[in-house]
Amino acid sequence: MENQIKLENLGFSEFFANGLKQLGLEGFSIARVIAEHKGSYKVKSEAGEFLAKVTGKQVFNASSREDYPAVGDFVAITILDNERAVINAVLPRKTIIKRGRSGKNEIQIIASNINTAFIIEAVDRDYNLNRLERYFAIASGSGIEVVIILNKIDLISPEELAVKLAEIKNRFPNVSIISTSNILSKGLDEIRNYIKKGQTYSFLGSSGVGKSSLINKLLGGNTIRTKDISLNSGRGKHVTTAREMYFLDNGGIVIDNPGMREVGMADAGFGADTVFDEITALAQSCKFTDCTHTHEPGCEVLVAVNSGLLDKGKYNNYLNLKKEAEFYGLSEVEKREKNRKFGKFIKKAKEGLKKYRHKGI
Image 1 (spheres, rainbow, N blue to C red):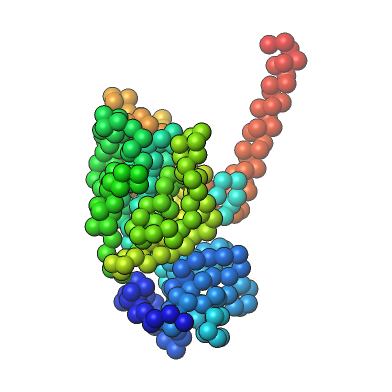
Image 2 (spheres, one colour; image 1 turned 30 degrees about the horizontal axis):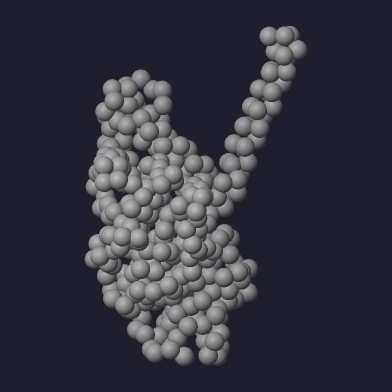
């Protein structure tokens, strides 16, 4: 059993206290989910840390993955002994970061009750503005503050760094950007200045961008295991396989996440007003209120793209993310119908292709 910790040091606030009352759970102990394992969770409360499982009733009543606890959640628990507890309910979430999974009609919760998301992008071959935009969308859509961290700046020249920073600022004009290097220990103090007591910060990014190494620097040790730099690629090999929460000496709370190969939009509320505010503003002047910004006459967005006032890469990424978000917003019946129609279209196209080949065209 460790030293007692106060709930506010876990990030508990009036918002969660009100949620507790609304659910009528005042008689239960409160804990925060700090790690998720297969079939169980590690939770931290004023009484210590426990390995916890959900009740059979919760499993029976769950209709989707979002009904289960996630790292960052506050939960009502029953303590069984010094090591075990039962999760009785999940308190309402203030914010949530989630994504859609390619090829699957399901949502994956990345973390909940986050104040700030640090989106990590390395300057090496994985550097990609469109991917940054995707991470930005899934975070800001829930009202989470976003800070971009451009990591491994020791790998490029100051001139190359200036070009990349200019590109990011052009695409994200109102977002804070921190340039960092674990090797040179640059930018770490800037990150520390963002982290406040009782606030929760999630580190997001692809595999190998240096998320765990940055958190280790903030923790002042090697709490999170990382692999050596690859001689072939010059990149660190990520080994984070599960989300886990860590507590800094200054009282800040950080979450390390496994690297994501893909970032699918989870629903229609994907942060378009924040990420694509320039497009949203232009759309107000479109001729048609239901303009899709793809072919309609009088579309101000298309005018801006064709004149060069709107970045074409940003416009194309907007369309792709919008399509994904709309798909995840469909009901299961609508998705099946959409997939059925698409399947019929493909089949018809293949049949037509065979006819052309048979005629020797």
